[in-house]
Length: 622
Image 1 (cartoon, rainbow, N blue to C red):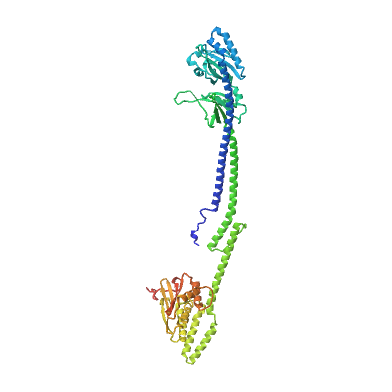
Image 2 (tube, one colour; image 1 turned 120 degrees about the horizontal axis):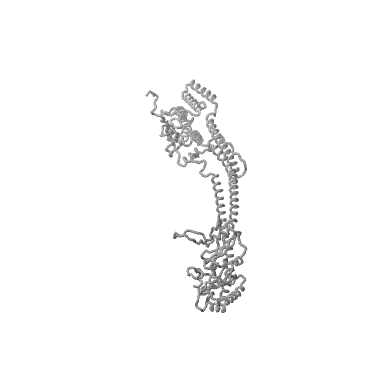
């Protein structure tokens, strides 16, 4: 495993993932909470507005019904023949002859006023005499009303309507010409038609503004709610509410510098679509409806704190709940993170310890949950893997030791040497040189084979060992084969494993040369081949067919300890693989039927000891 490619700690840890999940969940909850608050506020405001509009609709219906009855009463008065006859006969209220007739007129007007108990008074303004006659105040003069510029606007409107009534508040009291008139009255004014063609007579049917108290009602929907009735000019006709609201309503008209740069008063009108309005030092929600009959607007001013109080309390409650949830979430997050991260950190520490090659310490298991199961399985896996490695290593060592000693310990060396020496001296005394030479070669062969227990020998010792072995085989097979040696002198002191070439030569003689009737040739080579040292044995024997050669190679590379004709080569291949490794060793066999066989062993030069290059001489003076 390439640990340089691993990134520890990773870019996204479990802690960051859990924290993102917790924060994301809280953000979603907070967003949903705020949306619910907005939705609840919108629903509440809509409900309040609807309730206010319903209450205003009821109030306007009552006001319109009352004013409509008052208008009808003014129509009845204006249609009185006796009244019109008297006004036509005496067009000037200043005439001495008009005193008794005017008293009669006043009696008629009183008879009309008693029809409606809420009527305050009925009056007639005579433009010719500039006098006002009322059932409550009698007759009084409006001396300055004769001047055109002093005539109030409402009087100009009424005289121009020609029979259409005008409904207004404080009509007489609002004009300087009628300074003696009482205020607090709502009037229906209309022109009385007379036949004399003189000055105009205007009928006024007056009602006290207290009538609105009954018409609007005395139970506000919300505490601190104020009600205003004002005309199109912004003049407050009537108001109802607590003292703060009454004071604020009195300042409905405020001074302001107009755009033309001249001083004056500008009437400020509140918005008509449930918008916030400031009256005095308080905020109100303004709901209004307009009367089609009078043109007045009835407005309900609801204190902002009454509307938003419940929402604020709900917000505070939700904020408190949200804060508690945040604290609980982070507490649970910390607990959950500790429950998850602790076993993972222990597991990661164990993995790093195994990767570093340090002695394995089992990961502690605190709880047998999913993480505990993973920790236990990791401990078991590492222990099993180490036991398996140890068993494989010991098995390889045992196999290697057995295979090496199997060739070395078949007989007692001292007994063998003493016996061979006895045979050698017996042959010498009998002058049998052939037997003595063979015994001497055999003795040398066994001495080199055992090599005093050494595992590695030089190439020189290996070649000497092969020569004794080949001379013994040539004694058996007289004139059967010749031997050709091609040994690089610079490789004599290179150390290789013992008995590396003898099994190959033995296999070539037994299976390649003996089966051929003709004389054969055996060639042994030890040369450099690039980064490799080549050890090659070639015979001109019978050869091996391709299918059989493939089976033979598979049998040689098979690690199963089977017997058979390939035992020697398979044992050699396993020894080479164990000592030099598969990457630094090549074992090759090539053959053709009746064309001979070649066995080539290549070992990486870097794996061999005692290598001396050709340009290195014995004389190192230069």
